[in-house]
Structures are given as structure tokens and as C-alpha cells.
Length: 198
Ligand SMILES: [Zn+2]
Image: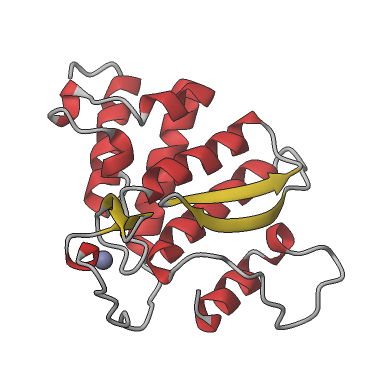
């Protein structure tokens, strides 16, 4: 991940990423490409939201790409925060690791990687444009996952993996790849919560 994004994330989420005696300008070392930066930021934001009220000292020890998915290793979390990381792992397989557009896990030269259509062509590795945190996406993702967790608890991890007739047979983890998809999930669960027929 490029240093600029590393610094943005380190500055905002230093309590999750570093021990207390970290030095200014420290680099965490995310072992993945920049297309997952927004997903990572949304996940760190959710983690902090759930950790602070319970005074949990959550530390992310490693974040890396493995078999086309984002794996986040951590300590000090509870089941709900564990679910946040598992949902991120499932969503990452539906987001191009290079550009952040919707994608899927494909086999590329013997490796499983998450790529969009454009980047799944062999050897296609254009440098991506400068990263700008997509606050609208991050906010939508955080809202959708929070509502899922309040609805299903740890069951949200299973819920996102199953095809849903309410979403025309799509799996919620695929929909978490876009702001619109996150919004659709939020609207659906919000209506359920308020007992409106769906
Ligand atoms: Zn791509």
C-alpha cells in the first residue's frame, strides 16, 4: 500500500494500529494493494466504534492479502469486532484490490486475487490514480454493517454470504463493494426493523 494512504490511516487509527509508544510517522505496513483502502478505513472505523464503549484494547497486528481476500489479524477484540473483520474479508473478495471497483476472486497466473474485469486481464497492472478516501462509501458501509450487526449479531457473517431473494439473488457481501449496495442493505434492514412490509 502506498505511503500516503498508510500515513492517513496511521494518523486516524493509531490506537488500533500501534502500541502506545509508537513514533510519529510510523508505518503500519498493510500488505495489500490500494483498492482496499476504503474498505480498510471503514473497518477500522467500525472497530473503533465498537471497541471504545466497551473499553476494549483492540490491536490490529497484521492486515494482508491472502487467497484474494483481506485478512486482518487482531488481538483484544470480542465476537462483534471479530465479525467486523470477517465481513471485511468476505467483502474484499468482491472488490478489486487494485482499483476498488466491484470485482471477484479470480485465478491469475496461478494466484487467487480479487480483481475487476479490467484488472483481471493477465499482466494488466496500470498504476491506479491517486487515492482519495471515498467518505460517502465509507459512511454507507459503516451504516450497513452496523445495522446488520444489531440485527443478526455474529450471524451477520453468515447472512452476508447467502444469496438473498430481496436483493434479486445477490449476496450482501457483493453489495458491500459499492456505496449504492451498502445503501440498499441499510434501507432493507431499516424497513425490517420498523416492521414495514418488504
Ligand atoms: Zn480494478
